[in-house]
Image 1: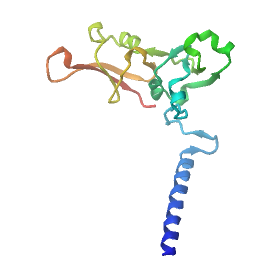
Image 2: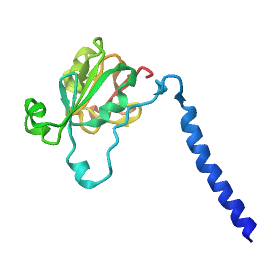
Image 3: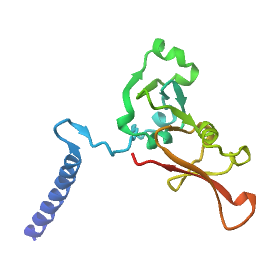
Image 4: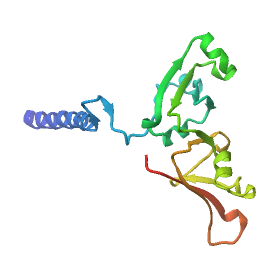
Length: 178
């Protein structure tokens, strides 16, 4: 009986150790950086007070409330990330920055565009701009506060389903691989 428990504990230990090794294998050990194809995730403690009191995110001097846009940003495009906490630093951003500011600077050739600017650049007619928007199969819930980097967008198209009704259309955005 003791041998059975020992074998079970041994396999549990091996399983947790292999998870740590797998993470180490996904990193470039020479440079101590994550491999470039990783997506950006902003992690915070899961306490309700911290989640409801989020900092203001500023990307290339554009204030962003919807952090879902970071999912579509390549880590290779980021030049710097700066955390502003003091009252003097945060004052310039107004009352929205009462919980601090995270400034993200992108490469010079990358511009952050709102969906309205993207639709204008890709010549989407004004009558279609209020349609539901899908990016890689995911519906964008807050289209008013959603931004994409100009270098990521491959194409934007109004798609109509089999029905000929106007309401059976949506906007699909194709992205270049990160």
